[in-house]
Length: 378
Image (cartoon, rainbow, N blue to C red; front, side, top):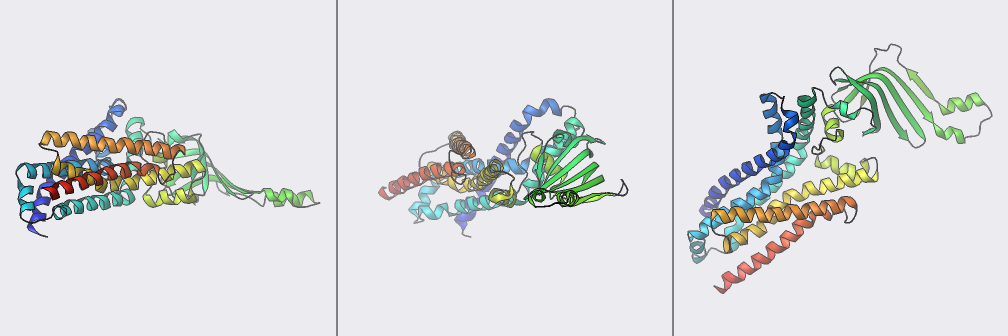
């Protein structure tokens, strides 16, 4: 790494860190303010832990803004002090000057993609479940009572929660394989990791295809229609069914609290390709996946706009803050409109969330070309 690269990064990284923390805290604050009335009784340690768990998502979503601010501040200061002019006069090409910032943008993109795959699924689930613990003194499962929840290969339903939300009663699990229905009922159940442990359970299999088969013997037809009807000899004998989703993830996904989806990028891709139970759920998974892939690449796309602005037009820290907000607000507005269009079916899933990147990227390329021509003419 050459001296010019180290000098640029030494100035840009502190500005990026400052901007990321500033905008990240503002994002968390704006998301928390509407909930403050319900969080009034929470303990300070629990509240601070809950707020800290939101930081990875806030940083992932605001990192493009922070990067734009860092670029504008860094190159704006260097331009005002004639350092850019000195580098260009010394024979350093303009594109070579920009290399460290491009590297920073691609590093931010990779870090955000990694966070969406391995970090935020856990923090999203924790944020949702912990919110209900702080506000309702329960696990959040009470919000799911009486609803049919698609979970893994099953549809889960229960009537009520007991033991402070740690267990559920009157449980029903259904799974269809063509015309074959597997129905598991239980008096009580609780989550053990990603499995559901049932007590007082009964398993029945109903094969509706038997109704179409010729049979003269009514008893034989009934046996074919109900090939299995088994229950626990002892009501306390447990039956464990693997759902692939733990309690926190279930609450985050279905509690309707306005929380972020807890699925990783690979989980969203699987549900989009057909793992979700219906077309609407598949489209939602696809739009969420495209948004979470488009957001990290905004770190690179917005550089296309920030770099020429910082080198050609923006002067002063106040102007840098103002332009960074205008650029990122334009990106978020276009991104939100694109997501709505994709979710409603107006645009394809793979197109809508990328509209902002395409539009701002095109603007940035035009600005870079104009700046290059100006430098060549000078």
